[in-house]
Image (cartoon, rainbow, N blue to C red; front, side, top):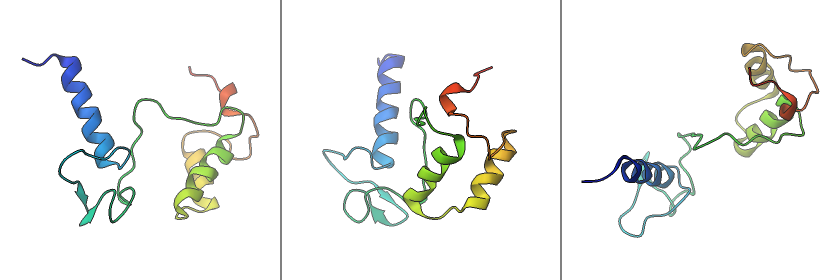
Length: 103
């Protein structure tokens, strides 16, 4: 019988494989009709935060999100500003995210 730790580890490996972060030793992962690691490096339709989100602690929320948005080039300034405002923050605030309160 597997322990909970082993099951969690297997799930994590599966999620990382689906996201294209690791490649399977056998078989293949197909997302949206494309083989991950062959046709595409990662699936365009999937986004995931595995373990803990990694923000650049020394820059603002806007700069962090702008950097992430630039990776795919699909999200513009207005959408970034709206997302920051939606969570109750000021998109013009230059405060580094590493200085944010967790409470």
